[in-house]
Length: 68
Image (cartoon, rainbow, N blue to C red; front, side):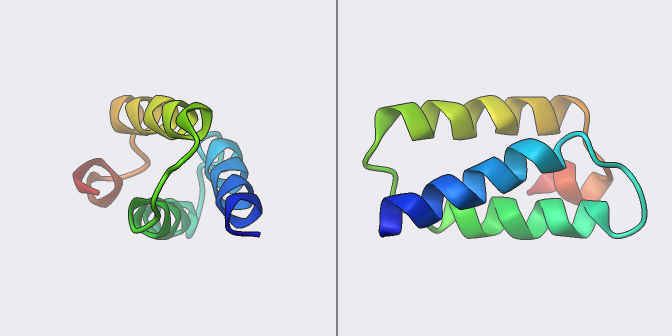
């Protein structure tokens, strides 16, 4: 169950990186924060998270997202 939840959060973050608009930066920060608290036991999921973080850092919605 934990892996499924982790996968679901990661999928939300992957979709979120292409959403720009009111409230989207805050959603991105919340997802990154939540995923950052999780323990990744699956290497593939960790790599996906890292890739999204690189993208979000390069194309940040806001300064708050870049600092997360």
